[in-house]
Image (cartoon, rainbow, N blue to C red):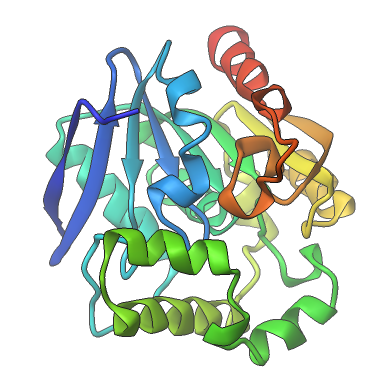
Length: 259
């Protein structure tokens, strides 16, 4: 599916790339770490665009968006998304973030709650104990050679720069190594209607999703039979027998319309 409009916006000293699909009330899509719009959301955008205006973004150092001298932070990413919405003259939107994008969405809900109508957190991480202990050792030893080939291919398809790819990978890895918990007081301050989704074979622990569900008072929780991002059609989860019936489109639409 081709976007209705795509372009760049000057955002906090950054040239930020975005795509818009269809019309209606806006649903902002925030991709995962090491990803692009297409690698996280290409499968689900056409389905969600049937009843929402989709605004998909690429964050600092990812895909077609520029980089800064500074390291990546979820707080800065949240501020960048907020500024983009201001530039597009959007005062309120629904927000869907996946993986690192869900952590960014959490920061947006904490820092700028007035801009969010409803919040969808797909495989969110708020605390270091939300993933198995081996994850942190893996991130500490992360190398570009071990990055999933599908993510590398997705980046290089739109940006012909091996150096840009390595920069994105290394900055993402350092951000995760230095990940800091979001404290309970901030999580408990979120009053936006929220849907939390993880897979039963996700990297995110079920008990972490339950903790978030407990802390975010106006939230719903779905643990579905899937791996990390499989329920969105994330590129590394696509297999020969993959079907769009695995996607959570109906769940998202029901939450946005009725919850």
